Image (cartoon, rainbow, N blue to C red; front, side, top):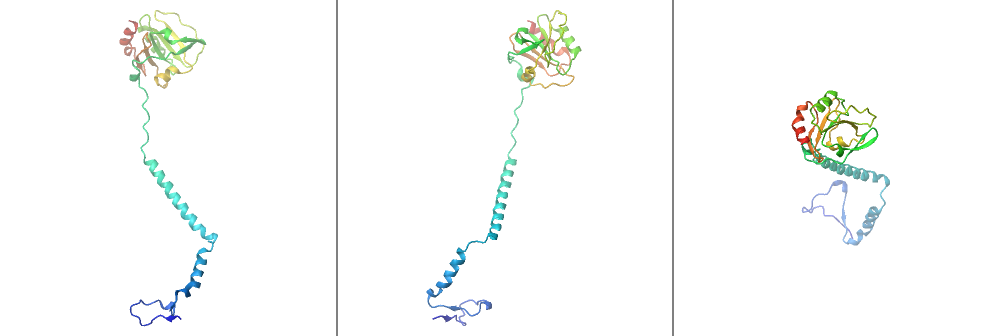
Length: 218
């Protein structure tokens, strides 16, 4: 038999008045009906509408994770690009076996060494060419490089040979890593063994060439 909760038990806290009169059963088995009802409520399928808050919470968690990953990636230091070879790095290196073009026919660069090679694909630079021919000693070929293997009239053969050649594959500029600059002629000095002796990214005066030119002829 149920007994009403003691109203005068001062050891128990007061219950909210809206609960009304609370009866405590003498036998716990009398609560089985209420327990079964609670189990049914818990096992009841969740309405589809209540899934939306859970999905929103999952979406917010994913956004937070992605934001954290992005912040971590951007915080990493950027890789330092490799430093390209400079003219000083090329001194003492052996030139590859380039084939240049003369009136559509291949010409081995090694067959023309020792040589001063003037890259005139971005600048005709007639003064620089003429001055280089004037100071080059006999036996040293002066080669002018243009990008296209066009048909050219061979100039009269001076004491120093002048060979206007084409480099359609742009192999020399790729080797030197010197991009063309409008109005600028670059110079490359190579000895008879094919070793690079001097590189001038910008030829301003033949005085920059003359000390090494004497050694090329020896």
